[in-house]
Image 1: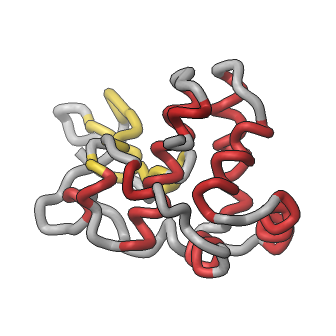
Image 2: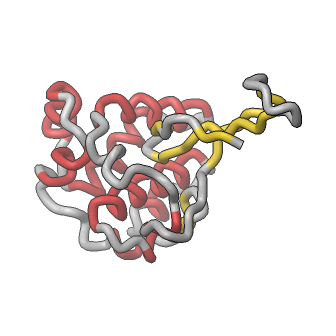
Length: 163
């Protein structure tokens, strides 16, 4: 089994896992995208370069959030409302972050204020409980992932926004 370069999909890091045939040739019998576990790493054991998502441009992941929501009959406006609720950005501030191509680290560092109800966000993203993540920046990214997942699953906005 070999692992390819990690990448982000809707803010969640994945790695391509390829199982080689029994002869050991480079021909793949099976390939899939998976969250890969490694007990020696933080954030619930995800095996990934610790900061690769931190350096990724938020603007590259944002369209994936919107696509995920729209595929499930939700809207870009709802995605924006969730992002603004979590981060404290207004619509203009969110647009500026996207236009500037700021990475996730800068996106959250410049956020006016994380919503005081954000600790109420609970659940699992990619096999990791968001409330158990030690790294504050990774936890914020996972909070956002979890909120977008809830939107795509059809949850009411009042519940998503912990009203």
